[in-house]
Length: 37
Image 1 (cartoon, rainbow, N blue to C red):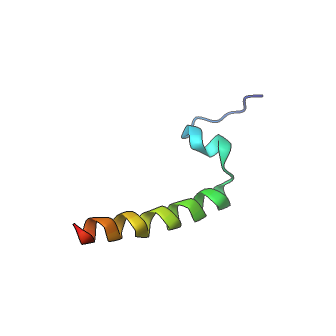
Image 2: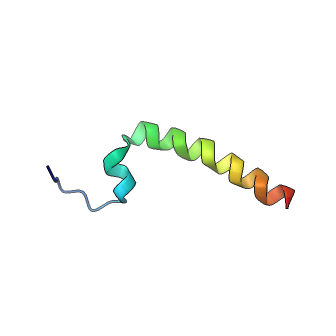
């Protein structure tokens, strides 16, 4: 069940919308982490 997906493997797991939410959750967290250090 492989389509023309030459993207990141995570993209086949997550729909773009969910992936965007994941990014928005992760990005502020890592940014705060870097800020704290």
